[in-house]
Image (tube, rainbow, N blue to C red; front, side, top):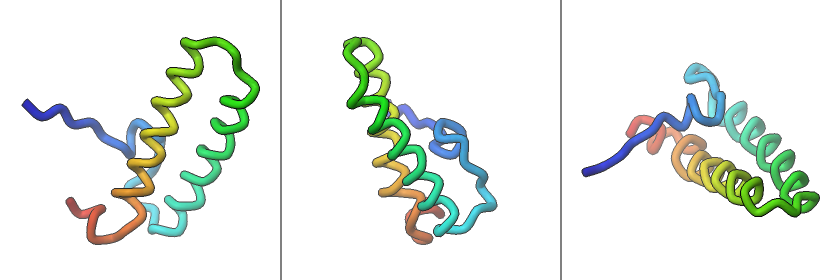
Length: 71
């Protein structure tokens, strides 16, 4: 069983954006959550932040390149 989710929805991105707009938005999200991660001491919040940052990593992997976006 494969569980899929919509990265556009999870990361609050618009499907009509081009690769450069998506890449800049992902960098903003990554910068914000990395700052919060370094200032946080709560383990639950750190797990949530790690989850968000992993989704941002997947966004870089799949949404920045035009060929992979079609998949």
